Each structure stands twice: as structure tokens, then as C-alpha cells.
Image 1: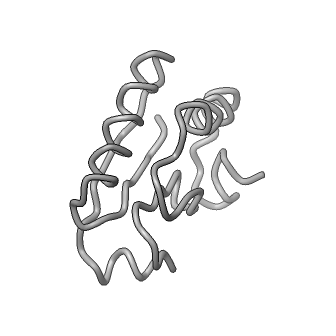
Image 2 (image 1 turned 120 degrees about the vertical axis):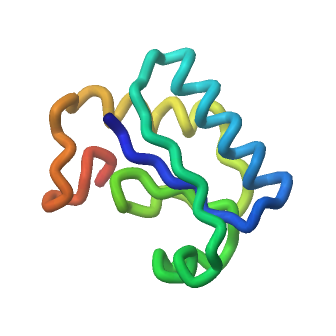
Length: 96
């Protein structure tokens, strides 16, 4: 299962990002655990200064603006190709 966090305080772009991730994951039958992080201190702990931010398996993959459907699909494809690789020690499945 892919652990995805959407970082943001609840603005329209953050909500859109969360919805797009849910939609693309459903289209690809990807098993994800999606979490919304709204606490400013927690967001800053990831080094994200511009929201929305997206964190996959504890690696920041996006910040500032709504990611495209194609970008989200690439994140999920990159992760699902290595199914079973969910260890937290090696940078996760999306470290390119």
C-alpha cells in the first residue's frame, strides 16, 4: 500500500489535489492510504513552504500548485511497479 499525504491548510488547491489523487488511484486500482495534513508545524517539518504539498512514503514529491493527472499517474505507476517495496529505510518506491 502506498502512503500518500497531502499537505495544506484546506484551501481549494489542496482539496483539488486530494480529490485528484483519489480519482487517479481509483482509476488505476492502486491501493493507497491517503492522509490530509493541515498542521502548519507538520507541513514545515517536511520543508514544504508552498502548498499543496504531496508526500509519498515520507518523500516530498510535489509542492506548490495542483499536480496534473499525468503526474499523479506517474507517481502511482512508479510505486505499483515495485509492489511489496514499502520499507521506510530505502527512500521509498518513488525515489528517482
